[in-house]
Image (cartoon, rainbow, N blue to C red; front, side, top):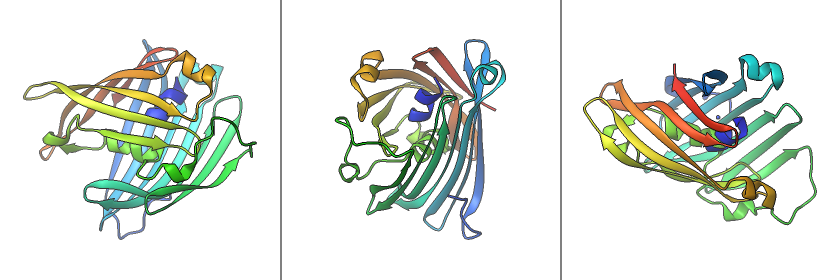
Length: 236
């Protein structure tokens, strides 16, 4: 479950030239059980952004398996779009630890490091074909940051983590004075082996936006179908 949420959905924070730090906190629940936490610290200013994120299992889930994702990224804003320049991550599934470092040139990712090293496989994705994609942490921030009302539910992008490619899209289904509801889907595209794709290729979700103040809206809750059932992410 944690990998599915991470994949959808986490650079040292920039220097003092970046302003207006925002902190995003979510609980992750499976049914009535708190399964994990997501934290993102974000700074934007001067046409640049920097993020630091962590997602980890908690409570009973952590007692069974300690899952953790630590990532950092930085980049620039171009015509209202996020363009990463550096990304690094360390993930621990409870069984193994992996790390990746990517740099971007003209919006095209270049995998600088992937550990542990692995032999090329038949399902590998050529990073040079993934221009315009977002790293996973920038993608999480793009979904959960506060936005003007007109931008709520207007999210769509492709992600690349150095190994896998996925597509994320949402659309508005209803709106009222204090709530906007949208549906979306996270779709595995490439870099997955046939067994993973046979398990599930699409993960539907529902997001609820509520006012965040200053005329902005943010996601207060997300429900996501995972390989382990329905998960909920609730803003703290």
